[in-house]
Image (cartoon, rainbow, N blue to C red; front, side, top):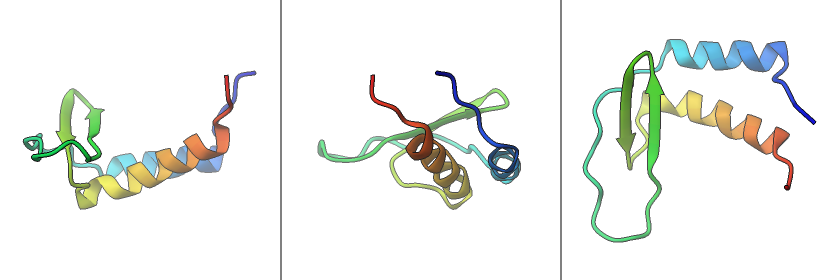
Length: 73
């Protein structure tokens, strides 16, 4: 079954996108236990290992949507 964001969820994502600054990628840290965030928007793409402040609202909104709409295969 396909699932769609509600109008409110879509507006929140658009608001988060409006404040997004992709910036530059950062080098991978030493070690093997870390999270890598990669965002692409309006032709810009960057990977970060620390979550930039401007990325936080977008990541929170995407995480909430994935939690709500995730279904096992």
